Image (cartoon, rainbow, N blue to C red; front, side, top):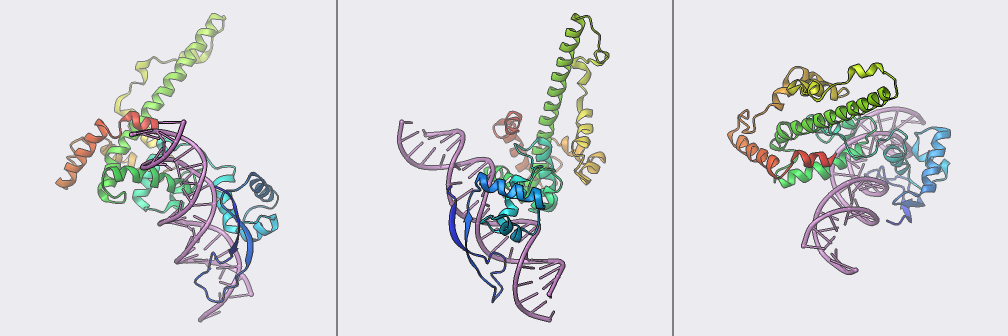
Length: 273
DNA sequence: AATAGTCGCAACCGCCGCAGC
DNA sequence: TGCTGCGGCGGTTGCGACTAT
């Protein structure tokens, strides 16, 4: 994608206003260069952000203020988190979207380091793709129910599995360290806390506790989890019997079978992380 | 190896609401 | 009270990367 230098009418905010003053300026569009990034970062480091149009001019950037703002917020800001969404984040997005719809900026406020643009892209590319595969609208109640009753529990399972795996790895590492220390004639106090694999085989209890913990920043979701709302849903039977709508129930059953057979296996979701 | 199709994501566009004058 | 400038938001686009054939 080549960066273009084209005449741009500075009319990007109020095209609907008559008599607006228009300027013909040579403005850059398209991908930002390293030099532009450095210019913007350095300028903000020295002068702070805000007042984007004047900032763009003062910094000598041939960009609109909007473009500068977007570049900073979505890419250059030091606290922007990169990489795939964690299961926790996916769960949170699904939950918040079911509450607020496409209020991306509002949703982003609950995912530190994630931008509204990133969440929006995630939703459109991943979630809507699966909705399309299911031949239903991503905003439909059916799809949202499927998300709540099927995808979320799977994500919890995956996150649970990952957590246990990490725990086991840490314990194995600790054990190895202890063995090494003992072999070297040293004894560490932490060796007392070494646990065998049985000690963290805690069944469903873990999922409930973990669910409450994992969305620490998730607002009401945590409360709902603690009130048993979500734990009920996690134990939703595969036959969808808790749906009052028999048509929906049947549909969910086929969805569930699709999940377990060839759609979203745990392995698939694991790979998505 | 070449081509077509798909995906992921950065960036842009148009609209809206707010504040200052 | 209306105009203007601006920040912010959600929707959309375009293109490089990746994958399948």
